[in-house]
Image 1 (tube, helix red, strand yellow):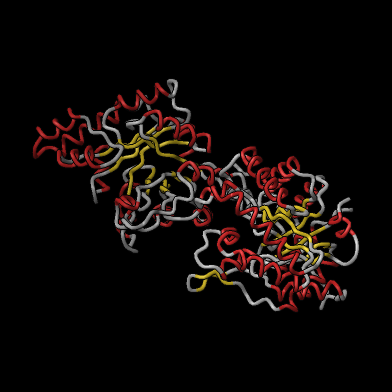
Image 2 (cartoon, one colour):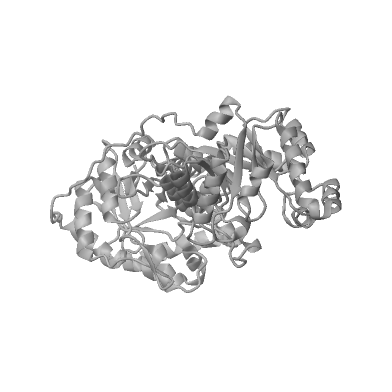
Length: 600
């Protein structure tokens, strides 16, 4: 048994330190990462360590939370990897020597990745390297902190264990309901971590002391020491700066008393906490402070989503039954008046068109939201819609919120598209959001259909979206297009809509590359070209559209009768496609949606 474990098991709870990273970010200008201060402002790092020791901390953590190869590489600091870690440990040891107190030094190791962008096996070498660097300079233990993915934490523990035999404290971040960002309840995390024989497990960072106490209440496992080091509270951005609430020391003293009563053997702070809060924790545990009032934890029952019910859309039924599908593409209005769109939809429905698909800010120009426009159309016209949805303009959280709202209003069909880049439209200075692409958007929809959000947390009930994707059989790089299409199917795509085609040879070639048949139903894009000039524009200026030379010449020779010639070209394409695809969607002439009826 190590000296640290002996101390953890005896006497009052051990007091940890506070939020080194946030304090350094505020004290040292233009840091790419707080760990860079180990090289650029070493005296400040030592001074902060000393302030926590003098406030009563018995455990200080090295300023190395993000000092791993993977993160430093992104900041162009990879060559400083060893130096940053060496100086991080040296600064902590120097502070201990100056204080003359017996203080434990914990090697701080944080997570490496964001949810969904890694394979766990790829992370082990980075964690092992980080641990080896810290042990070589003389840390007493490792503190694996602020993990939100349990499998990544388990990977980190295994890698650290392979590199060192020092004790490990492992802490995860939980929300107010005692769940990680990935939806893992604190009780589940505790059971899995308890089996790994760690020095302590617990909760750190998060939204503040209340969330940490909620997690600790769920992490009770016989014989397992608990640790907690929460943020001072929720961060906010004011005037370009990240600020934290002014958590009174007495509030933290009361938190420490509650944490002790829940079995915490290590109590400290994280982001936003200063020496004042650590001194209050020290005072509370040394003098065995009693909580100001009893702690009431809301033990919510784990939510279990009800089984998904089969709720097929009319489009889904039609494609399953082999019924020929006809949709017409509409652009939503540029303003807030939907009447022209509603009127066009009504005339199309009365003429027998079964569906309308709604563009999402086409050509990267702001229009009425496609999901909202679809809600209005379905409510007023009673025709089923196929709204397009792009991740260009919205974060993953925003996409999910919009989808859940649309689902509540009855929208079920969704076409996941990447979307035109902002630079081609009215927002040339915008890079777009693009946290995910169309493949990721398929995964979002599929997860919602499984009853969980992007992070794996349960929602109140599964959705029943019918997920469509775009595909371009005329793409220049056919191998890339095939690979993307296969990724979309694997991600959950249930039907496809092609780019506008003018020659079915492209469709046949793509079908052959798919093995002779489409794995999901497909609708053919039919563009109603009304002039030779429009054909030239489409072929030369619109990515992904190919108008064969012989069709361009037909339209040129037609002269004033080009519109009729274009109509005949489209009609012949539709007739020839009937035994190849499951239906069509017509892209009508600009501002003439009813002209699509001429083809039908």
